[in-house]
Every structure is written in C-alpha cells, then in structure tokens.
Length: 348
Image (tube, rainbow, N blue to C red; front, side):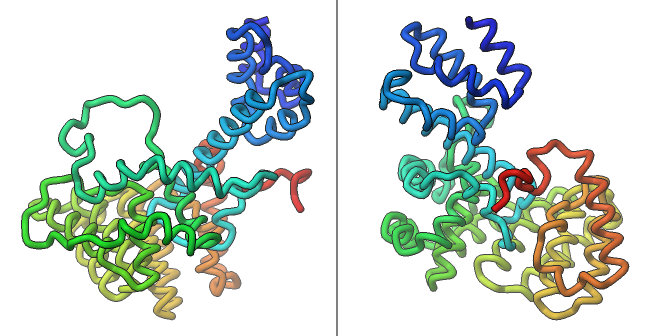
C-alpha cells in the first residue's frame, strides 16, 4: 500500500485524490502517514475530499488535523508566491485572491500562526534573531515570521481591529537611532507588514525603528551591494510612511551608483521608481522607468501583469509591449513564481 501511495504522490493526478483520502485514518500509522503525505501534494484540491469523509472512514480529530495541515500548506504556498512575485509588499487588486480561494474560514488559523510567532517577531524587531549572528545555524522548517507577510496584510484589511488588539503592543518601541546597529539589513516579511499596518494607523515608531536599524547596518556598504537593501528601505518609506519623494530620491541616488549593471536588483529598483512616478502623476516617466526595469534583467518583474497601479497606461503601445515581454518571461518561471490564476472550473 505504501509504495502505491508513494507512486500516486509522485504522479500528482487529481483524479487519484479519492483513492488516497480514505487511508488517512488507517489503523496502520505508516499507511496513514503515507496517505497524508500524498494528499499534501494536491494542496487545496484535497480539502473537499477530506471534508466529505464520514465518521466511519476517519475520526474527527484526524480529519481536523489533516484539514489544518492542508490549510497551512495552502497559506505557505500563497505567502511564498507573494514574496517571490512581490518582494516589496506592495498592495494591488487581487493580492489576496489565492489566499481566500479555499472554502474555509482561514483567518482564525492565520491569527493562531501569528500568535505562535510572537517571540520571533520580537527578536526580529530587536535584531537578535539567530541568523544575524549564526547564519549557519539550522532550524527545521521555515518560520512563519519569514514568509507570512501576505497573511498579515490580509488580516490588516479584513480584521484590522482584532489585529491591533492582539499585536498592538509591538507598535510601542524606541527608535534606537543613537547607536550603531550590527544586525542584518533585511527584515522578516511579517515584521515589515506589521510595521506598515501600525504606521497606517498613525503609529510610525516601529517602521522608523526598522528603517533606522537598516540604514545603520548599511553605513559602510557601497555600490551594488547597497542597492538591494536601499530599495527595501525605499519601499518601506513608500508603503508604510507615504514618503514617495524621499523614496524616489533614495532610489535615484543608489541606481546612479549601480550604473548600468544588469541585475534583478536594478530591475526591481526601477520598478519601484515606476510605481512612485505613477503615484506622482508622472505617467510618461513611469512608463520609461518600467521599460528600464524590463531592460535591466532577464528576470522581468512579472508583478506588472496584475499590478493595477499601471492601469492608466493600458492604451499605450509601449506598455502593451512591456506586458508582452512579461508574459514571455512568466512562461520561463516556476508556477509558484507567477501571478496566480484560478482554474476555469473554479471561477465564480
């Protein structure tokens, strides 16, 4: 039975879900484990089948555990797609569509994952997380704090009062701008999204602290090595603080230092410039920056395909050329790195 389940897992044919699901409650633990592992490769498609099992096929505790496991896998998949497609935590229409494409109430699970990560978030804010000083220390799995930014952004939109009630204490921090910060110039996605959430509600202390720490850690970093972290800071200024002109000035300065480098980092920085210029109503300059983004790397920012910011450019021939290029670039990417599209039979 176990080799058969392993083969089904490897072949990934959704028609086989019905053959697997009845074994998740098997009395033999190894068969139950093999069936659960096989189901996980089907993700959200397996949820309905698990829900339909009656009490004679699986006990309620097992069903609940498997459903939660599948939902956590779904959340991880959606969040990692967002991190790959949207590394600067930008808002756009349809950002949460995949996350809420399951017929389940996942907000309570998102809050639970967030609560379980509170110690990691505090360490990230203080700059004392393990990887700052021990980069080779291994941990099992990926901590929610590192990938769950999309989940926090979704809760900020759907359940802002509850999010503030449960996480509001993290907003009250000292800026820590009076000493040299030796930690990492990166920040976990959950921490950045929480900082933006607090800033949008009038408390910028956490966002200011993160930016001050990141700037301090980059004090002696120059050229190409500085552009990536500086672009992240510019995105935080733009998304969290609404400081569009300051973010644009930062990007222009560090792009000038990078020169004509052909890298994904340069491409992302130009993309941010295009976003800012659209906000400033400089559509011609924004379109040029978008073209520069595409020309700077063979890894196009395929977020362009779903980014509603550029809708005013829809009738521009040059913009349509950019979209055509992004479609071609998306075909070379793994499915997890492309914008999500619902399957035809699951629309509506």
